[in-house]
Amino acid sequence: MAVPAMVRLLRERNITILITSQLIFVTGSALLVTITGIVGSRLSVNPALATLPVSLIVIGTASATVPASLLMRRVGRPVGFTVAAINSTAGALLAAYAIGNASFALFCVSTAMLGTGMAFGQQFRFAAAESVEQHQINNAISLILLGSIGGALLGPFLAANGGAITPTMPYQGGLLVAAALYLSAAFLFSQLRDTASVPEDANTDNHPRPLGIITRQPLFLLAVLAGVVGQGVMVYIMTATPVSMHVMGPHDLDATASVVRAHILAMYLPSLISGTLVSRFGHRRMMTIGAFLLLATIGVGFVGQHLMHYWSVMVLLGLGWNFLFVGGTTLLVHTYRSNERFKAQAVNEFSVFGTSAAVSLLAGTMLHTLGWQALLLSASPFVLLMLVALFQTRGDAIAR
Image 1 (cartoon, helix red, strand yellow):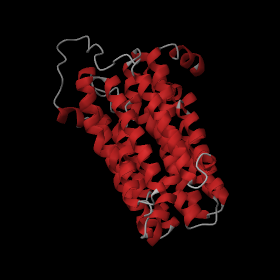
Image 2 (cartoon, rainbow, N blue to C red):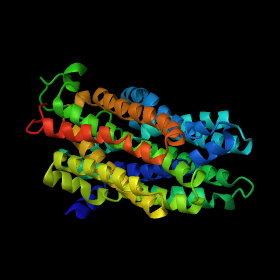
Image 3 (spheres, one colour):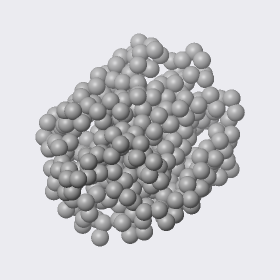
Image 4 (tube, rainbow, N blue to C red):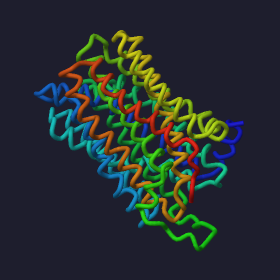
């Protein structure tokens, strides 16, 4: 049932544009995930700062979440997304220039710029939800995430094979291709129908509620926590993995890229069915499964550091993220009215990516000082907190 419903959604122009744009932005993200920690370790004189450029991606995302929502509320989704695409084009070009000039400082600036572009890209799923009928929201969100599969394949491929374009500077080539892709996304957004002016709730008495009332809803808090834990744990472990494998461990770049590719596929491939699973089994069960998959991630990673262990860790991490993130996002859109969406989305995005920024900063220090196993173990209290929250909110109903 899920695939025919998604095929029908593809006839919507907005959905097609957003899927393509998701592919482009995830290509850039996957490329950066694969190479940024490695480039950072080579350009930085302090090994503990190797993951700083990765952290600045997440910091850039977190710092731009609220401005992104406010800008799109004022000028609309198409203009906001176009600004993000142009900014990301400039960031990718600057990153290529920084590598060519061995400038760690400029490379950090470039990754922060790319992070701000990703903050806008995170709104693709909300734009998709606003573009369809209420009963299609779950599948629309899943379909946008499914568009990431192409990026999951192309990003690591560019990381491993970009040297064919710039043989003397292997990582520059992939960044130049990413810049061209971001620029093409800017042209796509000119064809996007604005969803910032979708009709408000049918009941005109439903005036926007104060933000405090919206954020005090138990299920709103649960939805935000699902994003915080899912994204935070994923970023924390994902940031450290390429460094642990390739810089501190014996695995080559091709093996590292293949593990990152498997991780990103595991993040997005379940979106073929996750929207339908949410509709059939409910948000709570999906998020519970996701939390247990994250616990399994920690357990498998604790066993060893051979290639099969890293591969299993990253696949389980991707699956756990998908179930938590899709479950949390689809729950979130049911906890606010249409005339409250921008401020509610801004709170969610800032919470999710602010936390991700903090943990990504910790990842490099934790990895270099205490090691891989300690890093994994330190993520477990947050997953347990998610399970406790799911248990405590059982029986709560959505109130809009």
